[in-house]
Amino acid sequence: MSNPFHPYDADRPLRLTCACGQHASAAEHEADHAGMQANTTHAPDDVPPASAEQLSNDYLEAVLVRALFPQDALRRRFLKAVGIDTARAAIASLLPIASLQAMAQEKKPLEKNDLKIGFIAITCATPLIMADPLGFYKRQGLRVQLNKTAGWALIRDKMLNKEHDASHFLSPMPLAISQGLGSVAQPMRVATVQNINGQAITLANKHKDRRDPKTWKGMRFAVPFEYSMHNFLLRYYVAQAGLDPDKDIQIRVTPPPEMVANLRAGNIDGYLGPDPFNQRAVFDEVGFITVLSKEIWDGHPCCAFGFSEDLIKQAPNTFAALYRAVLEAAAMAQEARNRELIAKVVAPTQYLNQPETVLQQVLTGRFADGLGNVRTVPDRIDFQPMPWYSMAIWMLTQMQRWGYIKGDVNYTDVAQQVFLMTDARRFMKELDQPVPGPDNGMRKFTIMGREFDPARAKEYAASFQIRRAAA
Image (cartoon, rainbow, N blue to C red; front, side, top):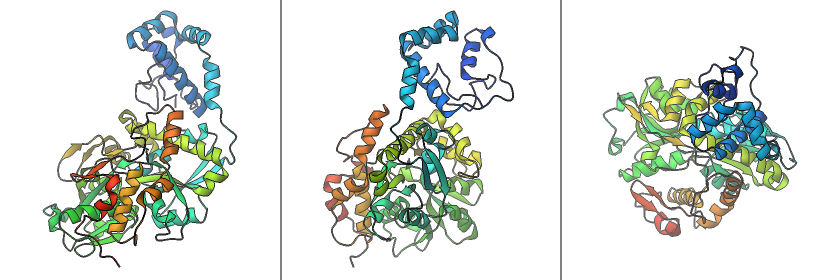
């Protein structure tokens, strides 16, 4: 496998090979296509894979070259005229590329290099997963063991028992754990939102004439966990249709990998679940996608990457390195041009263990919905990592609405304790990633046509007619 970074066209998609797949490196591909046939050879069968450090060095060099020659035509004429080796030497005489590359590799000493990270095999965890095979962890000096875990209760317990150093979480879980909801209280922190959107309501094929939620009375639905956006979004959606989710439908907690089998067996009528299992139901011809979660709340958070407070205090340099690795992976995952490559990378057994075509449909947003349509929704799933305080505040309003939180709660205090938005902004700036506003973290959102203003969260929480009666 050759270097996936095309060295002098950083705006091209990342590939597993050079652009045409016939060269030992992307540099040789560039030279060949610039007319310098004498400087290129086709790749032998035993070309070793590029190291993570080499990928990083090549990418830095690419950025510098593109900065000097921003126009494609000018850059190509220069390369054709002098050749790649001469170009590199000339640029090195002007810019300390080697020093910059070395600086990019410099890290503060890590308190611990070996980390165990838990994850559930769903596409929400894409940045966390792809950071392993694509070398993002290694570039930060980390040796990460990704532990595929069977369910969310086990994810929680392994973090509480300190069997994992960090973990894939459902975004509401650190809020719940920190307050002792459903478990012993232990401070947990959200470093990044792993994904936005990326869920759907899937129904069994026999319900193709019952797509209107007003007709769902008596139906049985699965969600992956009580403290999940899936649970809160399903409740919100059916309540907006006039149904009481605690009385008019049944909601069962079901591990995501078991959802399709339960749908096939008739144990449930549908689920609001994570991908790839919505698309897998279509692939297996047992269900259809009736509503994407982005159609309920476009840009909603789903999963998160979290740490215990102990790791942050006891190993701050390790925490920072892990933070950087996941942010870099998220930045790559945001680019639509990289999604097909990412589908290949996360498909294997040790990761998602899914057909590549299923993952491509989810990640690229071009998919069959099981109703005879091929839909194109590029942001069906996205990977914007900012952990907005207002996201946490909305979750807390729904926990209170449905009786998971008893009594008053200071939404803002809890959100600012658990969601590390300040850290996210700092590390994104260090990595030269765009940092969205507003700076105070109180971004407004629209859910099913209704604006959520975090500054008026208590009024919002009290405004719902359908809610669980206070105990």
